[in-house]
Length: 371
Image (tube, rainbow, N blue to C red):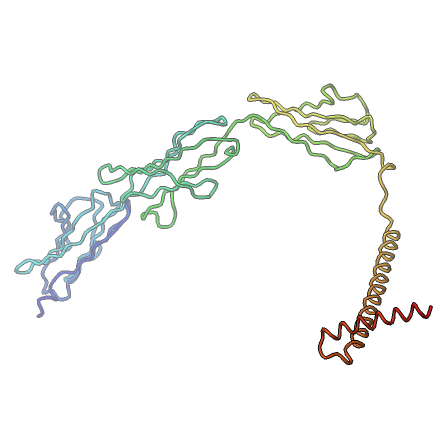
């Protein structure tokens, strides 16, 4: 019989804390020699199918001449270590399997947040998770967008405590922002642990005025809406005109944040102010109303007149081009004719030009004499 075939075969195992570890020892050929499992403390767990250690978590799964499989339920970090399978031949043959236990990180906690915050506050958010093995990975998210924090890892026995911090200078844009601390770990195969905190930031108000039409005309309907932003919400708002109270007219209606003119006229002209206040301050916005007479507005352009002017300009331009072209062509022909007259009997080009000038002079003289 091959001696190697009587050597026990085992495998290392990794299990999550609280899970079940199955330890299997096999041998290809066995002449009824017993197999035994012992723990890292060298305590016998099972000898064949006989239980040797009183621990309700340890049970027999399978016991034959070629296999001994046991299970350990509700595994703890203390169960981690080297387990030994022994085959009681002469001499005894052993094989060792290492059981790795993963420590599950606890749900993270976010510290350092007080509510409400004031605009301009400086705070440090700290996310803490403990119990992980190996050390967990802690990540920060601001409204689902990942941001970087300062990480710190501390060992505590076999497990680790991981912290990650964020330093924030709070402003009004942080109001309602969700900061999430997420813990990733090899033991969390299908999910992750996370905690979320939403910031509440109080800040002084600021105001804007929205208008329903861009260029108000007499007789039109106009609505002005005062839109205050602040926390706490600055309600109610105060409307004034030119530094005083609004005119007591049936045409002017105030409903909450809205100022409505049912039918505009020029007496409504002026500067309208909306003012909003909360316990952190006061803000205002202004709208200058100028009502125009619809009959005084310039009419639309006369397209027919414009078209006629363009046509005249184009026609005049064409005529000028034609006259100029004919003038240039006529003078160019005269020059060529005179040059040809001097070139008939000239031995060279210079003499031809002189002769042409002379002929022209004679022609002028003859012309004067004839007259």
